[in-house]
Length: 449
Image 1 (cartoon, one colour):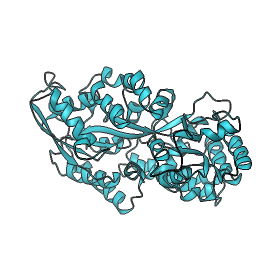
Image 2 (cartoon, one colour; image 1 turned 90 degrees about the horizontal axis):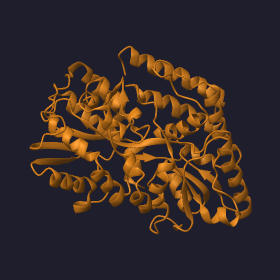
Image 3 (cartoon, one colour; image 1 turned 90 degrees about the vertical axis):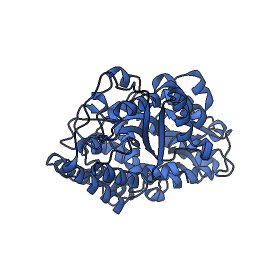
Image 4 (cartoon, helix red, strand yellow; image 1 turned 30 degrees about the vertical axis):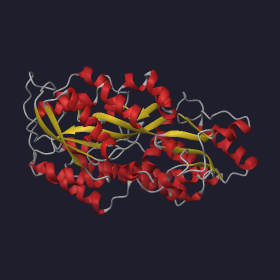
C-alpha cells in the first residue's frame, strides 16, 4: 500500500473532528495577513524559513523535499530552508497545523497541504491569500482546474506543488487478444469488460473505489461531471445533487455492480484494495491515481508487467466529448499568516512553481507537474507512461470551495455507498444527499462548521 493513498483518504473519525474544532477556534483568534511590500514580494534573498511538509517520495539524500531544498538553496544561497516533517495522515497534519496557526505561532512559515484545504483555511485566516501578493500572470501558468480548486471567495490561497488525478488502467494484452479498442465511453468500457470476462474467464471487469470515504466522492465527481452535473451552485449556497445528471451517474455506477462487471465488494474497496485486485490479474480495468502504474508493473507488488498494463484518460458518457474528467488530488503550498518572513516565503513558493522545481518533481520522482509548460514538454512526456497521458486529460476539482467541505463530502459518499450497496435507489439516495448537503452549506453560511 502506498503511503500516498494513506495521506489522501484515510478514514479519520476523531482526528477529523479535532481538525474541525481547531479550525473553528481559529476563527476567533486569527489575524489579518501582514501588509505587503512591493519591493520584497517574492524577491527577498536572505534569511531563514521553516517548511512543514509530509514525505513525498524517497528517503535520506533522495527525499524529494531534501532534493528540492538543496536545489532552491543553490539558486538562493543566502536563504536557508529548515524542513519539519509532517504526518503522512492528511487529517492529523491538518489538525496539527490548525492548532499551531490558530495559537498564533509564526512557524512553520510555509506548509504543504491538501488541495481541498483552501476554503477551510482561508475562511478562518489560517493561510495567506496569495493572490493579494502575486499577479494574475503567476496563476495563469498552472494547468486548467488547479487554481479554481485553490480559490475561496475570489482569493487564491494555495500555489499548486504537484498533482494527482484519476486514470484508466487496462490490460492491453487482453484488449489486443480480443481486438478491442481502449474504451472512450463508460458504456463501451462496460461492454468490453463483459466480453473479456466471458471469453478470458477473468474474474472482474472493472474495479474502483466504492467504500464510504473520500475516495468515493472523487470517483463520483468524475461520473457526475461527465453527465453534466454539479454538487452545488456556483456560490456554494445550495446543493444540486438531486438532479437528472446525478441520477444518471449514480445509476450507471450501480449498474456496474448489478451487471457483474464490478464486484459487489467494491462497496468496501479503497485505493489499495482496487489496486491489489488489478495487480493480481483479476480485473480488466482499474480506476486509480497516477502512482498505480508503478504499483501494477513492479514485480514485488504485481503479477503484471509493463507489456500487460496500459494507461489512458478516463472515459466519458456516450455523446460527450472525450476524454472524461479526472478528479484532482495533490498538494499545494500555503503561507502561515503569522509568518515574519512573507518575502522569503513567496520567494520559496515561486521557485517551487518554477520549471526547475517542477522538472525535478516530474523527471526524478514521476510526480505530475502543475505547470502547463512542464506537463507538455517532450522530455516529461517521454519519461513515464502516465506523464505521457497527463496533457490529454481534463481536470475537475472537488466541491471544496466551502469551509464545511468535510460534511459536504460525507453527505456525498455515505449516500453513494448506500446506493451502490442497493440499500436505497439512486433517486432516494441523492435526495438524502442533497438534504444533508444543504444542511452542511447552511451551517457554513451561518458561521458554523
